[in-house]
Amino acid sequence: MQLRQGTFSHLPDLSDIEIGAQIRYALLNNWPVSIEYTDDPHPRNVYWEMWGLPLFDLDEPDGVLAEVNACRSTFPHHYIRVNAYDASYGRQTTALSFLVQRPADEPGFLVVRTEPEDRRQRYGLRSYATDVRAGARYRD
Amino acid sequence: MPGRTQGSGSGFRMYRPGAGDAAGSGSNHTEAHADSDPSEIALPDDATVDLSTDLAGKNVEDTLARLDAELIGLATVKKRVREIAALLLIDRARQRFGLQADRPTMHMSFTGGPGTGKTTVALRMAEMLHALGYIRKPKVHTVTRDDLVGQFIGHTAPKTKEALAKAAGGVLFIDEAYYLFRPENERDYGQEVIEILLQEMETERSSLVVIFAGYPDRMETFFSANPGLSSRVAHHIEFPDYTREELLAIADVMVAQQNFRFGESAAAAFDEYLAVRMARPRFANARSVRNAVDRCRLRQANRLVQEHRPLGKADLMTLTTEDIYGSSVFGDRVGAAEEAPACPTE
Image 1 (cartoon, each protein chain N blue to C red):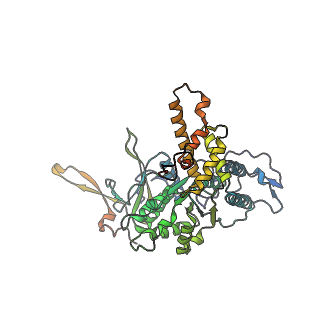
Image 2 (image 1 turned 90 degrees about the vertical axis):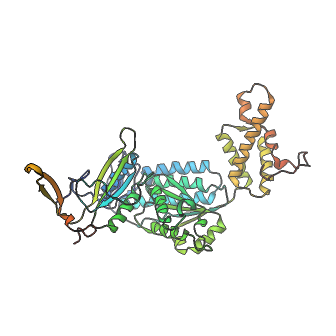
């Protein structure tokens, strides 16, 4: 299973050079870049943990790549993504957000069916990874 | 993406500013043009390379010509800059033959008195290194100790990494570098900065050039206290103080740049001023000359306003001997003997 969240998620994993190129594109557009990580892959998990503060006033991706590699070495089994924020008036939202690391083995999702009143069907998603407590997921 | 990067596996290396838009005319078998894509095919052993066809060489020649024209004096500096330019040019030629060598270390240390042109030369160095493809951008990020050292534990590393990230792909210019390490204060976090810098300067893939600058004796102490640092700095360049003739030439250049000119015998008057001023303490070479020119402009403006008459372009452009002799370094000669100058720099 491959998590399809964010930009480029249907492509094969980006190499470091390609990640640098994307970050440079974001920096050329004056979008500050930040790095986030999590191990809860649910699609409604919007707010991931931040790795340091957003990196402002950069124009070369080297610093960001160094931070990405530091995050990878600290959390080798987490999902890590890079966000770029567009602050221009009228937009003021995330402009680019893509995954830069996935755990080696992603177990996938389970559709949970519940029956509230009148035998209606309510559907939810549950990730198999969340059966294990946070911090211990995706270990080999 | 501007330009073209060389090699697929080496990441951000050898950015070639001239390679993207060059049109290769029919190449001979023995002589190859520098602007064809060299990454795949190495030249045969009997081929020759004409350095003058290397487009980067032309950019470098322009930069060096501007260096010669705009900076007066600094003979050792110019010589070293030319040597570095030649080294990088030959490195490019060697790469055409497939002779890979280690990336030469370009970290430098500029030592010299105040106002001797260290920051200016660092800017020119960045332009030249970029023209030769050694760094990605002709950009200099100037930092001092405050930009690198934090105020509390754990503050130093993010600050230093941020400075390194801002300078990435260009030149990091550390002014007054000896303040980084204060061995007498054990609560000082400067040592952490030095360790982070050492790591950064050592990595082969690092696209950063670090230039330290400061006064000679203190830089000597700084480097002797950090042997790892001094061994990573390949070029130690000294900036000698300017002579009086050079300072006069610099004053001419500054005055022309600001669309002024010296009136008749005003240049000789400025020469006299320099002779007196250089003997006084706290003389800062080119910076003092610039301050003196600014004060001459002040006195000229004052004089012109007091004249209460219509002014022509020539009046507004000329600095006369009166503007120069109005300086208080002449105060003890021109009459006012009872009033000693308040500070020696007026």
